[in-house]
Length: 411
Image (cartoon, rainbow, N blue to C red; front, side):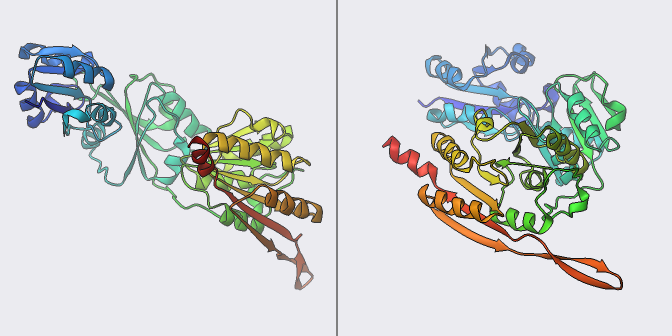
């Protein structure tokens, strides 16, 4: 006889939030398995209770236990940032059924009187999130936290979002349930339960990914900057995706880093720059623009790249004469990671253009494209406007299919 296995979401912890379907499954089960706080409320059911939440261990228990009906309890809803999926994979031999439960987002929003069909639901539980980028883009943001509410709210305040309305729910569904509301600035220093949830409202949310941000929107100082028109074409060549890892080598004021950060709002942009004054300008500009997913890396490439994760996209705006070494280091890093790479190089001098063409041709890029852009801007001359030419720039795009190389080497 095949063992019957059910993975059941028990809601928020209070047994009253478990569905009738889950309660019925618990009553009919011979063995209940789950973390101690999940199985404890059902100790009086006369079942065998086993404290375990790891899929591989649960598999061994079910395989060796002399019983036919098992229920594995998980918190909340199995479809919302739950360990249920990995447990289900471990138990695939038993073809487990999954029963839904009341999620923290549905419960909390019902208590607030808020619909959540238009909310972005994210988890900061054991993972890093770009809280500013998420909040900037969404009118409603629901966050599963991990004892890091003060840190998250502090970052919102640092990037200019301190006046947003925030709700925090603690011990939801229990008698000691508590809901706190206020602006991010007002409640950032309060103490909250480690497994609290947070709901942020931004009535001025803007999900657009800007391209070609006006040059005068950035603080520049004496640091070089990729100009607006060139930046727009560069970003079109890169085609950065939301969860990607991006390098901006020779980042200067961070203008390309910032546009890449808007596009990779769930990813990370590593801005590599050796000038301390440029690093400071980047930090100021990232806060002006409200992007919190830029990591400033002070140093020279390729050495500064050694400890960074393999990128998906790389922009090289300055190489300090080490272009060949940088390209070699990137190919080596991504080959080891089995990860494809798109590289875009901006070149102004004829020497850099020639060197780039020669180098990339020798690196066996899958596809190389060359674009030359010339632009002109008006300047006032009395009652007239004259066009003043900007420096022509070559934008060189190269795609490397390095994942296939790794697979071929592994055969």
